[in-house]
Amino acid sequence: FRNGALFPEKINGRYVRFDRPMPKNIEEQAGMCVSYSDDLMHWDGTVDLMQPRQGCWDSLKIGAGAVPIKTPAGWLVTSTVSARFCWT
Image (spheres, rainbow, N blue to C red):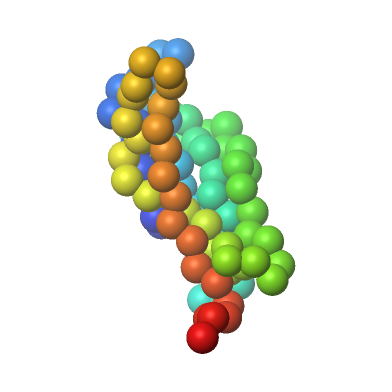
């Protein structure tokens, strides 16, 4: 996995991180997932959150941005993306 961000506190008694599985080829699409751990060594319960969208600004990869920030309204989360094309 790469492009991960660990939540700064446990949620429901478990560690939580955003991550992006490494594709075999750099040109393969890769989306953002969330995973859970009891010990920070073994991660399970991985769930896809977002997948790249063909022809859009997030058409190649989506990953975690900064560490999530807890606010009174919930968690503030950012992401980073890459595309297969550029606008000129």
